[in-house]
Image (cartoon, rainbow, N blue to C red; front, side, top):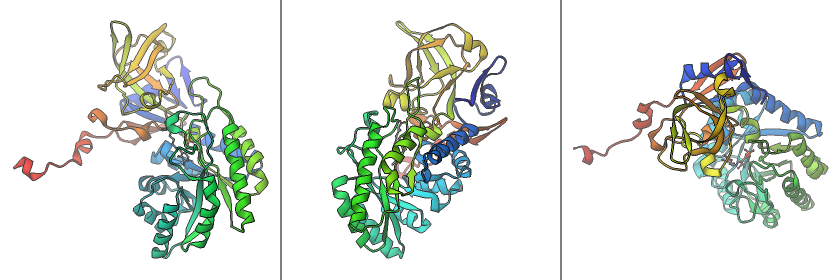
Length: 425
Ligand code: LLP
């Protein structure tokens, strides 16, 4: 995490900005993203793909972090977007990502969403079922448009990640079975309003178990492409999905070079351009969640550090038993002796626990802590549970920093509710 450093006077810094200054400006809890780290990671991924001799387009999976400032930084690096909803499509366009660089994925795109995708003339729609193929053909024909479509196949491989985020097994809802793919692809070529452009897969997220699952999936994809070509069907590119894991703790995680090598070895022989949909690998490490200690409480059996951030902000520990590094921000706290503590939020559920028995110093009310590697599926998954406003977001860029999303106001939090007149008469 080259964007993070600990300074004797200023404590934990993101690039050139001490986090205590961010807290003074924006309060806590606040998401903090390093623009420099986003750029560095985008470039590293591009370089790894180029070094493997691949012609590759990167479509950042917007779901990981939907912040407009994040999208803008990545757009300036030439990344496209992989979106899964009308909201994400709008966010990508609002951040300046051209429609020609946008791919639409998802198992349940609504007619309204497909209509918008066609009106915007985005690069590609990844279809996932025979039903969607028929619906999209009819819709495109009615609108006088041609949808460029890729067929997402489910290769039935085990990505060996958390069960809630594995997507490439036959029992998962995603994609069409590889055996059904040739007939459906032929149907796509025959129907009006559709232009089949390729095949796609995505086998899961936070893949850290090496390249075996990726390779198995891509080998099947390569065989499928060959079968489609033999049948005289056009295939212009292959969408390899996302899923590249990051080390949250010290676990070994595959490098972009390893992924590029696996793609080259399995799909390289086809001589086709490839697309990637990375989310976490790009956006995870550059982001952190800055929180304050509300109080430290000695329970009967355990010490609790109660923070002003909660599971509504960062849900990954509660939802996936995920581990995030937690660092004290002050230089004094950073070197203080540590002992086991449960780091918890104030929400009224025992599941509102970020870490159990974590080695942490004794911290006073107001002390700042930072949750590391929280840039992906952090802010993007937050909610207002317990009527807690959505946290602020800050972008750091060198020595500069700015609030890029205001903390949600209570007016906004309450403002879209209505009481029916019969309750107020
Ligand atoms: N493409 C598709 C079609 C996807 O469904 C996903 C993620 C990605 C790309 C990006 O995957 P990534 O490179 O970020 O692994 N909330 C969970 C992760 C859910 C991932 C969903 N799909 C978490 O916090 O771990």
